Image (cartoon, rainbow, N blue to C red; front, top):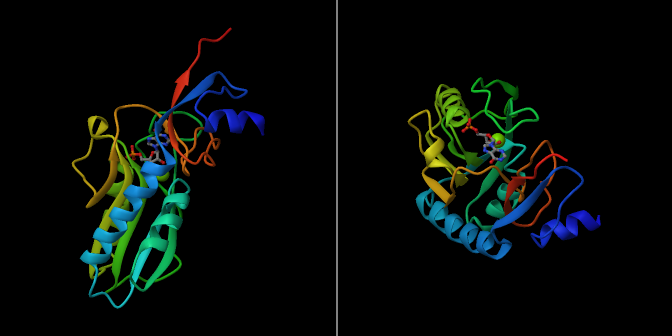
Amino acid sequence: MSGQVNQAKGTGMNHDNYVIDKLISAKSIAARVETLAREISEHFADTDKLIVVGLLRGSFVFIADLVRELGLPCEVDFLETSSYGNGTESSREVRILKDLRGEIQGRDILVVEDIVDTGHTLNHVIKLLKSRNPKRLEVCALLDKPSRREVDISASWIGFEIPDKFVVGYGIDYAQRNRNLDHIGSVRFLDQK
Ligand code: IMP
Ligand code: MG
């Protein structure tokens, strides 16, 4: 508990050999989410219903904040793809672990992703969802690491462009930890003793 408080201040070290340096504050995230939601609401203003598809698990905090700022009728669904496992490097192989509950044919879809890194995940997900013939499909990603891209893909809306650093917080994890930080921080590994 106290470790989490320290991390939230950006000063603490948890029980592994890394510290978290603050990169984007909770306040900056909230302001950006408001702007993104406004732009998305304008884009889909004529929709009868927007289906917001969150990619689990990293987007769960972002999607919760985003949908509450959308001025549109919407439904929320989730898709889970295979992850990094417990490392910090992408496997490049994308598998669907949990599919959508609902049909998306003829619907307006907004895919919500936490980070676009190499682009393999988004590329795979977009291809899959487009094969189901939605009416419109757009992507909103909280973070983008353009310098890491291996596939030519981009999101319609990006929260923040970040450098090639491994980040945690605001739903994003390192080995399933630190998702509950209210801000985004970068992981800095310390030397092993
Ligand atoms: P991509 O397929 O390489 O674009 O990877 C995208 C996924 O990798 C994201 O949805 C994240 O779940 C995960 N990921 C990429 N960078 C980071 C990071 O810095 N911290 C935690 N997870 C990350
Ligand atoms: Mg992810």
